[in-house]
Amino acid sequence: LNKVTVECPSAGICQTFLCDKWLARDEGDGLIERQLNELLSARRQQAKQSTYEVWIWTSDIRAAGTDSNVFLQMYGESGQTDIISLDNKSNNFERGSLDKFTVSAPVVGALYKIRVWHDDTSPAAGWHLDKVQVYEPESGRKALFRCGRWLDRGEDDKETVRELPAVSGGLYPTPLPVVQYTVSVTTSKRAGAGTDADVYLCIAGERGDTGDRWLRKSTTGINKFERGDTNEFVVSAVSLGELRKIRLGHNNEGASPGWFCESVTVTGPDVQGGGSLTFLVNRWLADDEDDGAL
Image (spheres, rainbow, N blue to C red):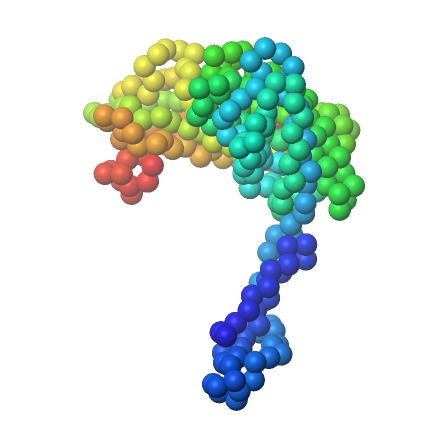
């Protein structure tokens, strides 16, 4: 036996106990039982984990259910969880149903928003989500998030992701507003600057981020990210507060995926600097140009 590693999610530590001896009657000292002492220098701190009970109600209207894979991310006073995959293998998310999940995720404190989406991979992908409740037994906190909208490429605003503020039991006594951010993306005029790839954007602020959003539907034209063009998109999210940064990328697909982005401007009612903030890019996002980053 070389060593034993013990992780304690509730305490947020990982401990290592060294052995490096045989447990065998015909090897070494013949012992088959060992008492191991912790190697304190190897102890690691980890994010404390908690158990959350997630209840999801699908609306009781025609074609409300989905067979796609559903995901959740939670945001609280002390951070955000990783992306959580909600099992959809036993007829979950059917019309009029209540589905209950127990998940383990980092402790993030009182919640102020969640993001729910699906991957649009099934023939019956469209989903009408009624509401979500998140209960953390350890703290006793129970937050409610109302939706009442489609997550469907063919319904409503054609989006498959929703950000929902806590309407009760959350961090703030009054729910945060859901804001429509207008995103203007300018492609350089240099030769070969346009791209055929699918582009995504993440906007980050003092209250979390939007997650990666695919920029599919431009309000200024069908052909997106052509050389010298500026395309506008709308990203709906719970108010981010003061904006801090963006992350931009693409999936490197299509006949000509390489892209030279000039700038990204984000406009919204809560954006600092008069409601508009520009992020200069002026770099290639291409695996055969610049540093090869996408």
